[in-house]
Image 1 (cartoon, rainbow, N blue to C red):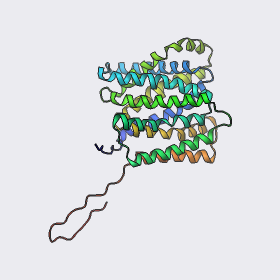
Image 2: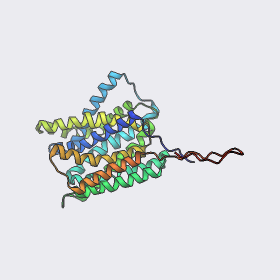
Image 3: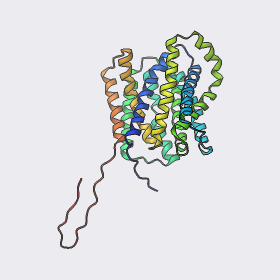
Image 4: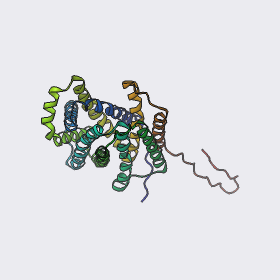
Length: 313
């Protein structure tokens, strides 16, 4: 059975994907900042609680009802794996390894999304998507190696980041069918609520740490909940509902390049030439994976007595 090549995203879903990627890139900076004052589980719970409040208010304003029963399986799985487990594992992993190693290992996620999407969802794997992912992954490797600090990595940290990547991929593939039955806002809101419930065992840590944490760390945690979670996960779901999981996963390869840029602007961390080359490769690979191959117009067969001609674009 052959699958038609997915169409490029229209303007609005493409803009939603851009918003998601930019906000998720900013999350790496905020996680490292807040992680000095909050433990991984407490930070995840505080982020998810803030996101759930923002999403809940938006649902009330828009009068969104409950998702249909057929969507709950995907919402539940993505809520536990992506909103819950992924965030705890990523927070913990970023405390064990340097930013470059974390970005490198987590970027296994889009490759896993492509494989799972092809296997479980029947997503097509056009050559341009595969080529773009290969270029972007090479860029992510370059960025990761250039940013990695000597001796800053640990086996535990690498394993945690790898588990986060697996949970991310499984969550995306689980979320995709739910979006065919419920709105992007419903899937995001109730997925975030499921993740919040899954992280409730860390409530004691959160209450204790929020009393001692500086205001800047708490604001970072709230920012993570409102923007990279509530807003970015909603725009992600909106765009994912309109394209394949594989193609959306490839879009996130722009994150390492944006993290480099944001660290440069916000923290004054000037990237080296190798890091810049890696960032350019990440963006170039995304551009290739999002592009659509030009198709040659069909050859016309001339009628008897007419000269032979061929239409070429």
